[in-house]
Amino acid sequence: MAYTAEDYENHELQRRSGINRMMFEKKMFLAGSWGADFHPDLRPREDEVVLRPHKGVDVFETDLPDHLDRFGTTNLVIAGMTANLCCESTGRRAMERGYDVTFLRDAIGADTVAAYQASIRLNYP
Image (cartoon, rainbow, N blue to C red; front, side):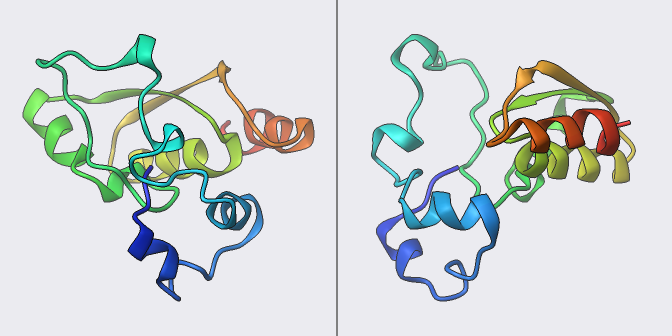
């Protein structure tokens, strides 16, 4: 996820709710900052696929579908920062597109224990 300085001035993008609005207001994913960059120990190699940054909770709004089609992928394993936003939205969209989805509940975070529990115990199943 990455937002440019122009994105932060976009009135449509400012119309967020919940934790997504808080992340946007704090400019947590400003392009070129540490919040939108790879951790130094996890930088991709030259030969690895890196998706275009997205500006919402759905990674299917990037070039992900093109890469999945190119590789003939049918199964997705999902891990990530926000159980009830990014992970859940991406998993839902993947299932709607016919992918088999596995959520790695030990590799997914959330802003509260309740949000995490609701996702892994209610929404994902």
